[in-house]
Image 1 (tube, rainbow, N blue to C red):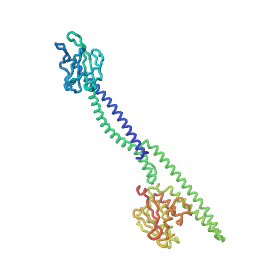
Image 2 (image 1 turned 180 degrees about the horizontal axis):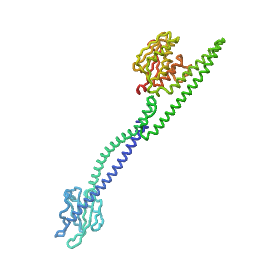
Image 3 (image 1 turned 135 degrees about the vertical axis):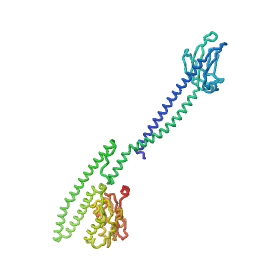
Image 4 (image 1 turned 60 degrees about the vertical axis):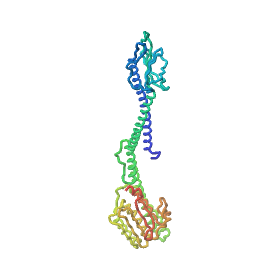
Length: 454
């Protein structure tokens, strides 16, 4: 796909949106998980704190003791990350075994009795801990003494849980992103499929296999199809009007040309042969141009616009050869027909007669003794060749060049120009080379795009 591809833009835009959405979702879910872990940790600390307060007592010597304290085994494991500490105002301190020889550095605040404060504080090894503390008052040796009870957990445990969650989440979101990107590519392909159908439809119209775009398209594409079909219909109508105008013009010229021919005859009878010959030459030139324009006008509605056109080749060739045999040039040469009666070609009969008539007339005019017309069994290759002088290779491109004036086409005349126009209208090509007979060989065959379409 090129940079200008609509498919590439849609897929790239979809993938960019997916990546952005998944990144924001991953960030949001990670923050939510971190908050959830924080709430869970706070609840656990509250439970441990209540358990400590429930087990806090004073023995007979006035020393604080903890009976039936928290049972979490991490409190007994040195530096496990879960700690508790109880301290009064006279420096008496009780600590969990997990603190080992360290202490929790409690913030200097004064929570009200029964109020739980939460902080980040410094724990063992100067690590950060999340701490919950509560202040109570105990009767120690008849004295109402304030006591601070604190429970803490290493903040690294919370961070590690968040990191692990983020890692797992990134993997899951990555796989989800790949799946969504593939789904986006499929969705874009399905969404653009009607455009591909339109492309093939236009190609079929250009190749002559169809005349209109199919109407079975999604509602969003239907207005475009209707407009294209309306444009095709308008173009067909305009072409038809142009054909009629060209035909009317050509037929309108025939009467003046006939009058000029009659005048030339009278001049010749009057002894002015030079003037009569000049007029006849002009008349001949004008008639050839008129014939060519009539052929072109007819071709505007033929060729690829008639995908069902088909003509059996052999009967038409025999009819053309029989007609040429009655001409002076045709009577002096032998014409060999090398094809089976079953060969058909995708041409209208009138257009094919125009093509082969010009080629055979050209061949008989330049042949010494022999003309041969042959066709492949599948009708994909037709050759007309003679044993005449041929056309020099250097001149052949000029003979088939488009838009040349008659006097610039060399000795082949106007016939090959008409042949070129007709075969191109049907998606075929005309090639000229040297025949095995010694003269010119004209080969008709489908061009590459027509072969592929067939």
